[in-house]
Length: 545
Ligand code: NA7
Image (cartoon, rainbow, N blue to C red; front, side, top):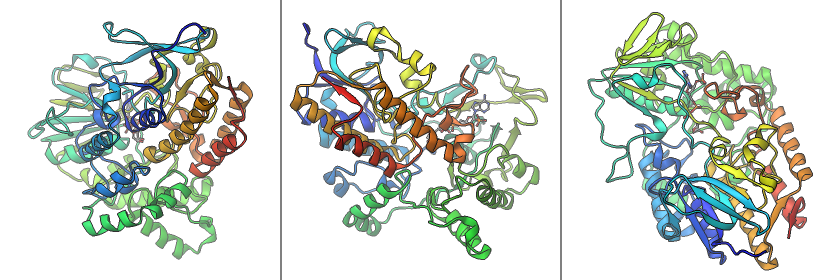
């Protein structure tokens, strides 16, 4: 090696994961530069400021569990916190870690090229005035849901009114939330009914003169169960955080819900119906992640719960045709991400709300005045695109990442994604991914599970420092074996047979029509066990030199 890098480590992204990873590496004595494309910290919570944006995780388990000071200091005001509060939490955490000083902002990475001779990366930026930086190791904390995806509708740029993608929402320059915008008296159209669309629709229905929802495939939504967080409850949580941690660690996806260790049809009908009723009314993902153990795997058990939720929709939506349009027909309950709602279905009973069912019509184009279907024009003042993301791989694909022999990561992934624990890909030494494809943290309560992955990687980096390691790379066989394992686990769940961002399908992106193994859906305990086993066996599957 003839060249020394500018920094030991470059961390890309100042969201929850990037901030913590940068902090851990700095604390262990590495020289760290953090780079962030936006002008401030917060990641998705910085960008997604649309009205109604909030977490679907119980507030107390969405955060930095490793940070006792913050856990004891912070008081959540709602059981499911809204975006401004989550962002202000991240700002406070950054203050405690004193990590902002290690980041540069408005630095959007567009290239990371491995230099084999010197075992380092040269990282370039979109901003031409920024000089490239070299670093021995790159930790990419890009976020699995951080590259907004617009629909490819003809005429989309001709619209004369206001239009917004929810993940690029105008911000309040003074505070943590959205810009002050007034939708009263306006005709608003919303495209998209995923978790984001549902939250947006609930809020827009309160203020818009008229709200038109353009609905393609409906989702199974269940009540959020939000409410104020009392000080008494907060005090209880603070004295018992270990209980909450243990519960999340034992659960499939890092939430405080555990499956009932019985199959649905083994339970008498009256008892199981009463249980489903209780779970439906329960907080957060109670019904999704806390029902009978076979509901997400057995088609008959799944149909039973789907029928139960379909009846709830029929009970709540007065017009039977609208209710039928809102009941998913293409997938069973819980096989796609469940949006959580607060009086969402009742919105469709309001006089000022109408539904355009894109299964019985289609959007022909966007015009300067609104959205056109074969039946006519829906005149609008505002169009809100809640159309999701180029999920999981998108943010990595947007960077030209080159490994050994100049091979592009994007090309490798097009030939079949292979990762070692979702943290690294063979052929890309020293390039790490946090909450990326196939990581256990991606199908999980992200701050909880990403911290697990970060702690694991940090232990590896301690060893690398002690041993003077300058190159870390997984073996191809190790990555193939992990990916096969992740694939088998995905095959056991009905979600593996369903088109959604979980399985890499996106109708707005050419070529994204084949299902992939993008997530590790085996659950938090299994993922941890896999990683621990690798570590206990002296980082088997890695070549370190
Ligand atoms: P999602 O869950 O990907 O939802 C996107 C929505 O946008 C979904 O309802 C799509 O319908 C709809 N969509 C996209 N393009 C179109 C067009 N062209 N026409 C009509 N409807 C369209 O994104 P979210 O932001 O809600 O949530 C993503 C994750 O962020 C969420 O799971 C949480 O983990 C946080 P489709 O289903 O494709 O028919």
